[in-house]
Image (cartoon, rainbow, N blue to C red; front, side, top):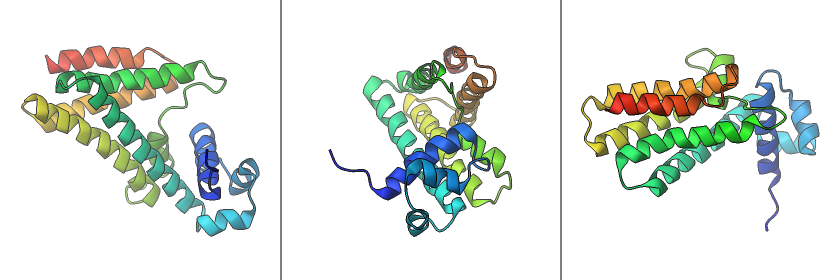
Length: 189
């Protein structure tokens, strides 16, 4: 098994800290200390904290995009079942983290858009990519399934998707994705 590069080590550490503690609450010195790297190593890889946040968000977005698409494709050839599988995957992620010491941390992309609330802020724009990817996945699957009003239905499914994540985080409801899935079934009927 290969060694993790210093860049990946920094990104892994930053992601863990940002997701659980917040972006603005997590300092560069904390990341350096937790990652066990020299200050110069961090700055050789990332120009500043904002660039580190953006790199972490972009990497996480790519990972989640691949995970959701792979999951949908592995479940069934039926696009209706693939849509529902998105909620099943969210459910699995929520349930797996509810039992941990820190609990379910919520959505790193929603958190980023809240902490960097200017619509043109580079961090918020990076977070928007992941939300657009999920919306695009719903649109693609709805179109493939032959639904009309694809954009409208995709937006509604996206509300259920994000709502499940927010409710799991804020209210501690580990069944929120199951409820969203049931609502998606009604929406698609």
